[in-house]
Length: 348
Picture: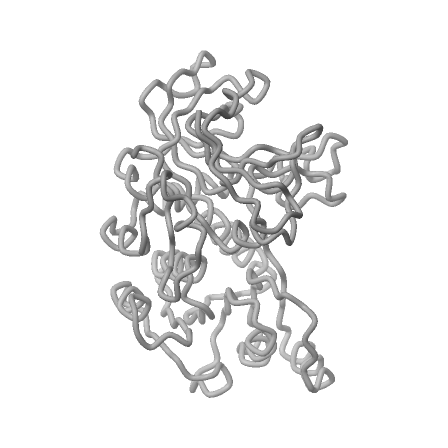
């Protein structure tokens, strides 16, 4: 069968293997036919050789962590043949740490977790894959064209879950949220914010392309000015760019008793002249919270599946700016300026 692979740590080792072995039974009872995988910045960093880890004893790593497939067989009875399914990306560490022991593997404390298509587990960019019932999330049939968005949606479902938990520290009724960045994570964060009845503002540098229209179609407000030039103080900021200046400006902009959730990952290596003392003073005196959030556990995947099923499906489809057949796999991993979400399709 076909599989898209890299040799981790080796730049430009991306290739389509035509005779990859069938998935081993040890991977899970549920056998799945791949329909598509979404591609994100993580995949592009792995193909650039920046990181990635093959399964033990192997040189190559099958890519793909944003999965969508159709069940071929499930002897466990968890799902039925023909059901749509996505595979949870992260698996708990073998020790396990206190969080992994209670299925909060997204909060792993010792770093020994594994991740499909990223760290120590084969990914979903192959014609067939297997998954354990515990890590298989069934999808509403309406999501057949867009179900590969479940993984990024699970990331923002976790972010909103933790924002709500932090908010219970006091009487807290947020009204306004600022989302920085209108990539897939930012747009999905905005979608979930709209579903929560909040007044949503999205900030991005793009003035052309689909991003402004996608934001406005949600009923949200689109901004292109710097964060510090906005004329309001949001109750919540979900930062999705990882750009250092945007991160710092977001921390300074949030209103009293506000919450800033950082989901973007900075590349590092850049020094900024910044008044850290003033930021500290504001955070302390205004009871603000800044926290980071990455990955998701099964509860968040299920919340994300519900949110996507309730969304306008034409809007979700519009997020997918390119659909590329697996035969043209290299095009899918090549970045284009106006890309939002690129999907590699296996059904072609």
